[in-house]
Length: 251
Ligand code: ADP
Ligand code: MG
Image (tube, rainbow, N blue to C red; front, side, top):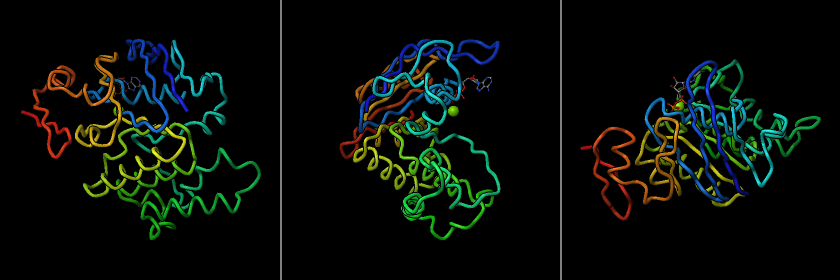
């Protein structure tokens, strides 16, 4: 599985250009983090990748196939998307996760669909909430439900918009460990946005620093430098090594 993003340009109706010709490649088993300040265009980029937003120019190839030419149902088999803000309706946790199987269900829900759903609910520690309505969940519980739903979809590309923003410290690391495990052992790639730089650094293989709708820097951990972070976020930082991991400390 390879994902190639070529020359993506996007603007909202009548608005200024938000994404100005972005290119990137992501390989199988890789976790890529899109970093950048509020309003940099991170969420917009994720929506352009999965085709929720129509790009003005450019496209996205998965294994050489131009995904912008595919029907929504076909895109749903390739890409799972976890939005930053979910539409919350009166539906149970179980049904909400099961909905992730929709792209694979041709006639009726199969035993396998139900089993995959049950397994995901257990893995995310949601067993006790299975029959609860999702509009009665805490922010963190809902976030887990959404990630579980995207995983049961069995996509090749997982797009996650701030997947840990509502999670407590323990759940942040638990969910990220689980996601990395799925990516490393499946035929899968993950692209996520994240505000917590230290969390992103710890669990990602590659980074894209977005500034003013352009890629300011891209690459492995070597792009996480004080100069790059200060230029993109406008805040001076130290980048230190602690127990062999990079840690960002604002000054
Ligand atoms: P980020 O996720 O990096 O914080 P977004 O992609 O959400 O940034 O937003 C990028 C820019 O696009 C911002 O200036 C924002 O105000 C604008 N924007 C986002 N959504 C819309 C929309 N639906 N209509 C018009 N402008 C939007
Ligand atoms: Mg965003």
